[in-house]
Length: 207
Image (cartoon, rainbow, N blue to C red; front, side):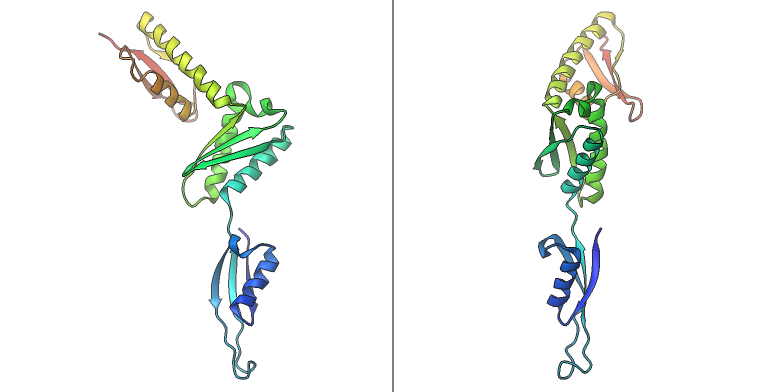
């Protein structure tokens, strides 16, 4: 967090001095007046300068974008980021030539980047934000794959009469499985294990 304390003959002058030191504009800062100052007799005797503290407001989305851009460059996959925000939900779409490097096997790299970026964005946000990181429409393709997987494994559970355990998944992917099988009255689903190795179990319903 960048902040400076500045003085001036007036509050306005002190603020202008602080903005110049921070190389920013007033709309991107928060101003706290420590002392409004005093003109004094003839503007000299008994005068007291105005003192202000000016703090630069940090944009959590910009911090998260900068983090991702730096990481992707170090991985050899420079990107551009398209941002959409709907209230507390933020969606980052990554665009670049070597985007497959950032997705990784079964989206593991993308999931890890999403987890780290969510930590960054909430470090600077006043309210908790939920972040979804996507690239090349991977999330939709992954969701479609998970729905098909859920259906296939539920059939296995019904045929064998035994529980079927899936591989560990992040919470939003587990939710896809739960939702896909919610109306199937021949199986039930529940999560087991501890994060980050929590997984879904599909259990046949005994009749």
